[in-house]
Length: 73
Image (tube, rainbow, N blue to C red; front, top):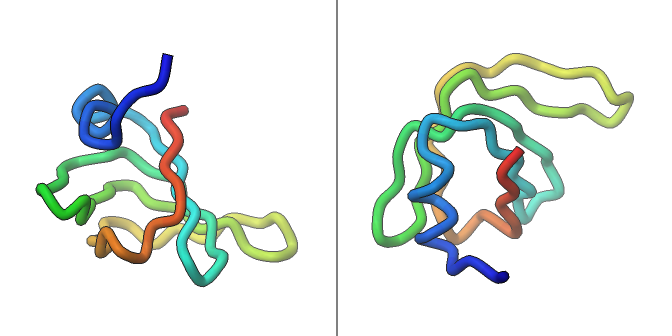
């Protein structure tokens, strides 16, 4: 079953998500909110660096047009 993006976001509120951004960065964190443009607020965000280490970056707001994929964890 395929979920529409907004349905996936609604089901993923307050849960862990993984995001791939246009610039190639991989972020994981807890989805705190979103709007109709798929702009996201993500808490407890970590970025996976090239050497597979993780960098904590806290709460971030990500513009929807910068997101390539969203996965619920």
